[in-house]
Length: 226
Image (cartoon, rainbow, N blue to C red; front, top):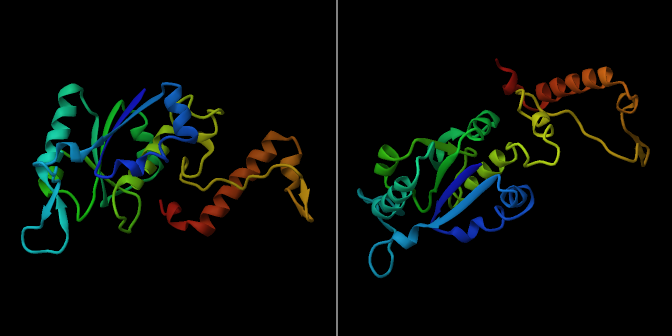
C-alpha cells in the first residue's frame, strides 16, 4: 500500500480528481491511502496566516515557513517518508520513469505550492524532490499533485482491472502506444487494420511495435534521441 499525504492551501481542489475512477477504486480496495492536509490549520494567529510579502520587494505573496514546517514535522514524527515532494514548475519534468519509481515507495508527502511559492528554506532543508508537470505556471500545485497521484496509483498491482494494461501504456518503453481500435470493424467506410483481425499474435505484435516506433518518430522524435 502507498500512502500520500498532500499539503495544500486549497484542499477543495483535490476532492474531485482523487475521489473518482481508478483512484477511487484503489482507495476502496485498500491499495492506497490519501490524506489531504489544510496548511491553514497551522497558520499564524487568529486569522491563520500562511502567506506574507517577499523580502526584497518582489511582487506577490510567499507561503510562510512556519506553517509548512510545523505540518511536515508533525507528519515526520508519525512515520518515515520515502520522499517529500514539492510541486514546482522548476522541478524535474514528470515522466513515466519517475511514476514507476514512485510506485515502489510506501509513504510520500506532496507539498502543493501556491501564490509565488513557498519560503525557499523549506525547499532547501525539508524537500527531497521537486517535480513539475510541464514548462508552464499554474495557480497552485493541487492539479499537478493530482496528476502525480493518478500516474502512480494506476501502476499499483490491482488498481487496474487488467494489470497488463499499464505495461502497454505510452512511454513505458520510451515509445508511444500503437493505435487502438474496437468494434465495429468497419464504420462509415473506415476499417480497422486487417492484421488486428487476423488472430495471429506474432503478426499483431510486429504491427504494434512498428506502429509505436513510427508514431514516436513522427510525433515525439525527442524520445528517440538515445
